[in-house]
Amino acid sequence: MNLLSWLRKVPLWSGFWYTLGVLYFILPLYATLDFSLRIQRDVISLLAYQNAFADPGFLKTFVYSNILAVITILFSLLLIVPTSYWIRLRLPEARRIVEYVTTLAIVIPAIVMGFGLISVYGAPIKIPFTSIQLTDSLLNSPVGTNFIVIMGYTVLALPLMYRSVDTGMRTIDVRVLTEAAQSLGANWFTIIVRVILPNLRASILSGALLTFAIVVGEVTISSILNVPAFSPYLWLMGQHKAYEPAALSFASFLMIWASMGVIQIVTGGRAQASVAH
Amino acid sequence: MGYLTLSKISKQFADAVVVQDFNLSIEKGEFVSFLGPSGCGKTTTLRMVAGFEVPTSGQIILDGADITDKAPNQRNVGMIFQAYALFPNMTVVQNIGFGLRIRKEPEPAIKERVAEMLSLTHLEKHADKYPYQLSGGQQQRVALARALANHPQVLLLDEPLSALDAKIRVSLRSEIRMIQKKLGITAIFVTHDQEEALSISDRIVVMNEGREEQVGTPFEIYNFPKTAFVANFVGTLNTAEAEMVDPVKGIVKMDGVQFESANQVEGQKRGDRVSIAIRPERFSFASEQKKANVVDCKIENITFLGSVVRIQITIGRTKFNMDTFNNPFLELPKIGAVTQVTCSREAVLILDRQ
Image (cartoon, rainbow over all chains, first blue to last red; front, side, top):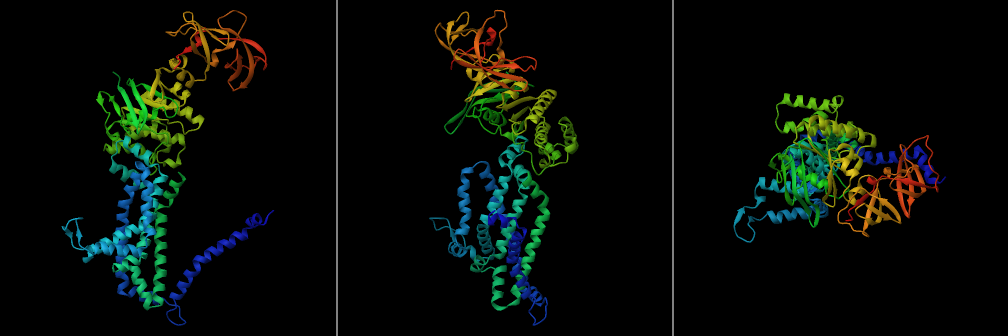
């Protein structure tokens, strides 16, 4: 018997790797938690948390980023679900192109995109090849700026959102379900809303969660376009304070776990069921 | 003019012609099967009736109305797919009621109709289950109930049994036929399985390369195939090259062995090359009395198939299959033995050589 297969038979060995893996994730988290509780010398306290949450900048940026995240999710769903559906149904040859386009967000650094957005939208928008001006620079108004930021976020979220939704489309037979619904008299709107979307619930939720995490954690575009987002705030605070950023980091971990838990509860049985199917 | 008429239907994809000049008229309440190998255009033809494909040319008339260019959701046609196509997010009851809800029928009417469909397909016990909790056969019965709930004018079945295992396939097949007869609904059934087509249909359309080769009852298709393709595709068949000796009496010669045929083919002359075809079950061992077509043969091999025993024989230089019913008290000849077999004049078919 060779050594490798012998090692595989020892439960202790797999236990070792498992423990190592768990430690890899838990230790930094534990260190952050421990550090965040030691703002007072020799006393364990939640003072850092109180300070962090009491800062008016915290609530403002946190709410702002959350609202932007929700809008980004809705916008990217509106863009991705019909696109992916149509590609699966009628344009399978376009899938490679769209997949390539969605990965551009990973290939092009966010800083390049940020400056690109400024250079394009910093100027007044004209009809190409004429001097007719459609609107003033979008970046001159807060609404315009937020719009540009949301578009930027949408591009960043594209690779994850597209892949989540497309994987979901693959697990159900989109074409046959569409034809079945059509032969029962359903129109396109009914098919998407009552047949396709409900069966994509799990993958849409996972895409939404990933988008949420990207938007709330996004620093580059938010800083370059100077919007009051959460991550630049966190970064800024890290420059001036020691314990509060650690407290906020740990708190945001808890929040993400909580939202993952909610998703598990909402989709749990169904997501599993559709996989089993 | 039938209830459903397809006239001069053609369908072309890019540069491939899939269906060519297809004509068919189906009576109300008739069960018609499209039978053919894959790629013969049978599914495409069915999909044109459903509205998922638009014919390149030709016309489809259903109950007097031209539906050629109508969208699938504007036709009242029920469709059953090989992959069941149940909505995974809905229970059996919701699946069956889907079409009725689309039509905005009143809720009590939906309930009543769904209950009726559940009892028709014996699914009462599974009413509140989701598709993934059902077996393949049960799922296909739900699909049948769902398609029938809308009172469709035509029921279209696209290889509905191909994904099921053998036993379920046979029982669901007779169930589909029973329900179809009970409701008197017009149905088109697409299959590549000849046994399925023979057992379930009023009429069979044998298709090859986008054309109908022969249209007829299962009895006609099996016993009197008009072309070599039909003869070969439906059932097992022995074919051999032969030479016409007497076109009037129907005498042909194969490897120097003479066969008499009751099958007259027009325009044949003495000395013409022809194909003859004999079904394996039409051979029997020759008894004492002198009959037509008693020929010498050599037993090559014997295969036991359960109810049937298949014996390979050589007549002249040509190998033939011969089927006899299994009988435990009957002695079979030994392999290598030389004996005589016979078949009636009607059993020898002379085929068009196309």
